[in-house]
Image (cartoon, rainbow, N blue to C red; front, side, top):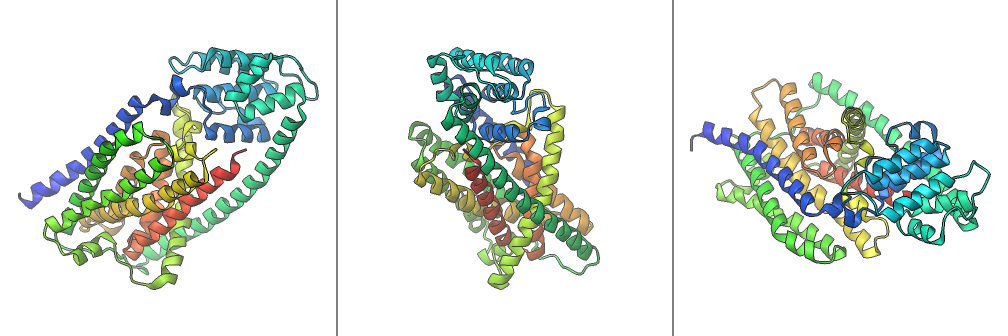
Length: 454
């Protein structure tokens, strides 16, 4: 095949295969409506909703101003109704209940809706009680489905001592943990912002050099191998789907998922099929590290710090999109791993951290920063260097973000994180700093999700 035609085909596949990936994910969601608030799981609260609800109770004011304070999921609207009722906004609370009930076919059970409505209508002014406002059966329904929000209702309506203590103590710890998290993310984010300015200035002054290895013909090999990886991953995922769907969705399934993730790297054998020496490929794909452990540490720290302000900008864009897109809310954004954390056993927690902090960073950095970024950079080496780097970063970051399951509103934030990892890929020529930074980033977010749950 002529080289020009091969290059054109690779570019076409770099667009079509990610689109196929997204289509397969959407088909999976359609086959498993329980993962998207379907009737079978309509009475299950997302842990993200619980965390946001506690934050809304703690902050009040602006946190309750959006039309859907806790998101658009039916259960999130029932939770929002209880928070709004506590804030004295009874009419808005009843509106949230009506909207939840109208969410066909995802509406929560009628007895749960009735129990929440009864609690909202009976919610007393601060400092008063409304004992016996709900029947024992209604309290049983609330306790079974509304979790922390049921405790909030017991504390305010009946003055239940245990519920009052749990709510007050929980909000106190929430305030402390949020303050620590804010100090961390704002502090490291500001350091990352300074680093971004310094690195950009040094790059413009040509005081730092690119670490990207260029080899004739390797750009096509990198692109082909990335396409091979995506197709391999899809085939493995579909093939293992039956086992994961019909088995216990617990610890074993997570270890199977991690095994499948690593197994997708068998696609790297495509390089041998194309007759390329591994050393040549490793140089082009950033799979070699020369610089020692200390250099790896500080470059990984740089990668993580630079990712935070980029992620912050992405979150701001996501919030803007949320305000412009009807029927979508940034509060609905979550990852399946976040949904699994609350109540997970010790073995399950270990498996979740292994998938998020080891398997995903290793495989995704090889694929997206090693193969895809390397391909685009080498394909555009004849462009002005700044334009080549910018295009490679944006293209690889967009594909990386789009295939994640959090949805379109999370794309800007995920792409922002990806940009931070691209910086050290360009600077060092290696994917290893990005791997470490990626693992640390995921680990911190998972740990934060765990400690913020009541």
